[in-house]
Image (spheres, rainbow, N blue to C red):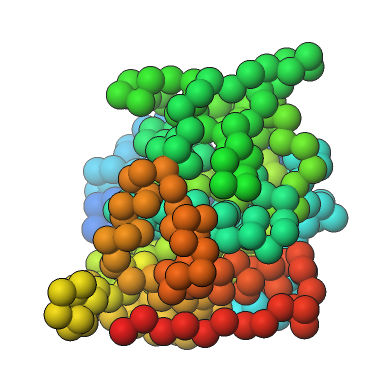
Length: 373
């Protein structure tokens, strides 16, 4: 039987993040969980570690995984890194949004708030949601930037209809491209659309850091970050190197997607990033010919999950051809049909986020409630 003590004993020969103290004695191992013959190990490191020592971090991960597999019964080991973050005094379920005053991570100059749009798995419409949310925030009069953090599968060039290469200013910074009222930066601007990004974790982390720090973003009220799916290096890099004001989780209503959404929520909560809310995408489908509604992926699962986890529910986005067509055409529906019913859904999400982040004055704006049937 695999025990935490046997795993810790196997890690005794591995130096901790400081390179000297044995990992088991360093206090860096914050959690060990066992599932069948697999072991999951969480190690707490300084928030700057992934940015300043990416090679060392990758080597530490490999050593820990190899050592853990020497413990009796262990066939595989998965290691994750979390940042040293103090607990907050935010009320349960509605965490206090963090901005430039947060001591964790180095703020991006000129950027007031950074919001991650994430999902536990791919294929749930996260990038489309991020693009339309950014456009809707810009429609509120905010200065908005969009960072495409999905290094392996960048989508923002296509979603924003941008194909040019970014220029470089006198300081050697990339100048973000602009469309639909947003400044946009993506690795997709720098490589061919069909070129696979065969990169290891440290390279991904370095690329993300450059897209954050070596871009002339200027003054932004909010930067919307389209995260890759899952809970890997990219998510930890963002959580540990910049002060995220919060995360928006996108999920379809089906149980399988919600399982992964829970993991995404747990990951952000683990590093003390507030959950600003859940969006249920592909919530339902209305036939354009007969008008009959079908709940293809079930319905209401994300709302129930939000209630269970005591986080805000931000809204339902239907499975709609117009949203898909405008997204594929580089014309987000929030921009091309701003007065339509689907843009109104994204607008309501944007208003909720702006209220949570105190970006605009809630009393000055009417609340639209449009239901599509």
